[in-house]
Image (cartoon, rainbow, N blue to C red):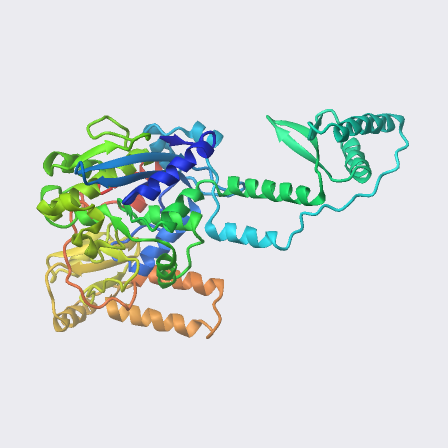
Length: 574
């Protein structure tokens, strides 16, 4: 079911009820862009802190324009899952300035996204923090209006206008069945409005004079009350109604968080970060701070992309984009029966629905989750909902880390993965260098993998195990044959020297904007000294396409190098 501002108020109770009854909710979102390709392109050797910084920048810069929610509930008597799907169009806060990636918008338009519906009928939202701040302001703001001083009127036209309004007011005050007097405001000049506000409000007690807009027409509304208390109550209700409209879609997210329903997504990082940035509170600057915010606000999350990368699914389904995973699981792994929840709308397996519609993608994500856990549970799946499966323990609050060489997931609540990068070489080189030059310099190490960070910095990763002594020996030989302007260090050495140079430049206890930028650039280049030990595993072709291509030895263009209409594309792994 599509939800816009036209039907949100009517549909919201049923949405909240479906979430309340659900065993878990699957989510998906569409954005105005994925990331800044010049400053936040993913590197295969990003640390967890670096990847968080890049994803945080995307969540703070781009808009979330569609959000899909599918509520799944296990029906033991039928050994089936009921589901209800909702697709929300989100316009966001008034005056909010966002980045738009033209290629992203074109991609969504090609997939049938209705931008007219978004801009005409998109829902607003406030973060829970913004709502709390507004309510705190209410305590310091009195709703008791001050009685204005009447204005002396000399012009005959103004006197006549006031006399006519006063006559209507006397009839209003005498008529117990009538509560409101509405005066067409389009034909009343600003001066006449001023004398109306001041003189009428001063002459008649317990009234409220205000300008209201109805169907794009501005009118002056004069409302009478029995007492000052009833006027205050009316204003409080009006204030609450307006705040409720501003909160909008956040009511749905609040229900998910308050009921602590498990949240399931596919490649969940951006969906989760956008949701938290826009509907919970601004994402903190540091990765460890984010973990604390997450633990305090968000229930358990699961990432179907991460589950699909483990056996037996990675063997039978090598490509785990959502559409392909959904199709393969439904055809190879016999998912349970799915039925649409009574009184709700959703999708059916086998129907031709459009991908990259957030509602349909949320439905596919939930089906994939159930099908995979059913397979892992074996014959026991009929006895309970999949969210109680013991196989989920290792996936709880871990999200897929896309295009990473040696950190397969981000741990949202616990310690980060600590890979061993002691045998990785860091190379600074002229911008004219290509893969051919790198292979020539590292001719004694085969096979190897080259990871370009930018045109003048790269990593060289030996693909066979090498002890520290061998690494040092190779480094000595490489340095002996290094051409001018080329600098080579081992990963740990480069990190320590960079770290020392940064600490020498920053005044203790003072963090300037320049120092933060310097630190961010440092992290982009060399990573973190927190990484120590983890077995290296060659990346799959899906997540790490070959860097070297063509007969001239030049590195194949990475995503950040591509210009024009090909800048934005959905990775195969999605």
